[in-house]
Image 1: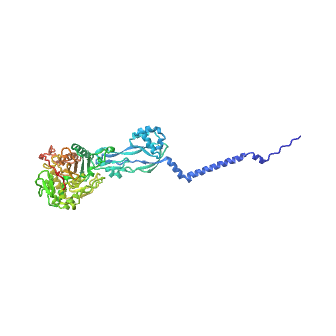
Image 2: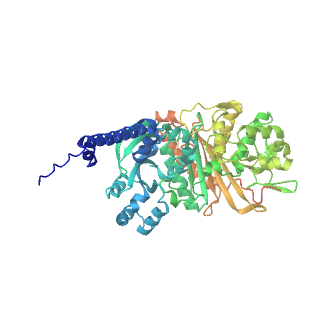
Image 3: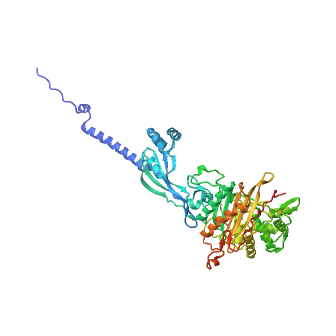
Length: 604
């Protein structure tokens, strides 16, 4: 039987058997095209449409803006010696989360920065949401590098500056100090902070995942370093004053003390010291009381150091000259309105010069009672009592002087020997500097060469007469002889011993001992005031306690400042003529227990 031929397959049936190669290629190309289109669209979206968003996200991960620390300006003394300088240090900071991810390195890190490991871990855990915390501020570069050498992820260093004071406690009250961010907190560091601080800069950098800077991108803000300043202070004179004041306070077991020295021709402050003091390089060991600049912030009743200003009013009135009229001080007691004004001795008849030489409270009171109240008040005010000196020092006290229209006759008499008003040592020193400079007052300043305001307070003739009257205080028979003598230099000065105010009146056993002086008297260059608060060992008189401090310090200061002696003419004949207690030709003084402390209270 013959077989039939099989029928041929229809083309459509072959297609149903599976996609052809051509169709598969078309499908692949289409898919790839769509994918490419998607990538292009995505790239367009990322690089064009939402470029800013993604750029910000990238920058947030690798870009950082870091500060550029600037050095604070240097403070120099008048001779160019540095008094305050900024030294580079490194502060260690960390990203807490990164450090905690490497907990095994915490013990070594804690030891390097001087912390307990558990305390460090707790510190980081509490701040784990932050990206920046300080671990240790202001480490020395070597110590900081030892920390960074541990290579703890998330731990980095930041360059900063720290203030250093080469003179330590000697300059502390004048300079003050800065805080950990290098901003002035007290003293001249605070007064001139804007000038000294400068302005930190900023730059944008790229950091790697370890926090290390791998590239500087751009300078955001240029740094402006702080500017230097030259003070009127003479470091050498400051050291002299500091040492003598400290020694005297320790020997007399006094509570505190201050000394101020002023250049009378310019008003520039050459030295200002206080005791107790502190070390600005080690603030944590100091107390608020030790950091107070008592020469500027503390007030005292001036006692008899005020008497030259009563005499300034007396001479200005035309009623008095240095030699007359004579005032009867009697037997040392003057009863007025049930109040006993006393002298330590019975002096009898005294000229105005004699009143200063013997420091007679009775004489000063009787002179004041003959003066117009307005004249006496205006004279006190003109010399700066009751108002700030405008030195620019932070926290300077204004003192206190009651308005003249409220003075009664007894109050007026008491004001004549230094009670009933308060002054700072700087105010008192500036008053004496005004007398010394022919009656011209300069605003006290701490800046060398500043354009200082000057004002005529009293007639030059009267000022010169006052200087000569004050010379009698340090000559034989005066209250300051020989304690305030300086060999080869004539000294014009005034002692002052005042009872300290206490609850209900004045203390019988607590005193303020002061000496204010001008040197050299023939051609004044410097004025100084020494105040010792509550000396408890030995004498409490201003002449015996503060007079020697003045003499020793000013003896050195005159030579350091190259001030020629009063008897300079004799040097060319056969050398300076001087003995143990002063110039040859002066009689050996009789040391009297003479001063100006009233025996019982000062006010009614």
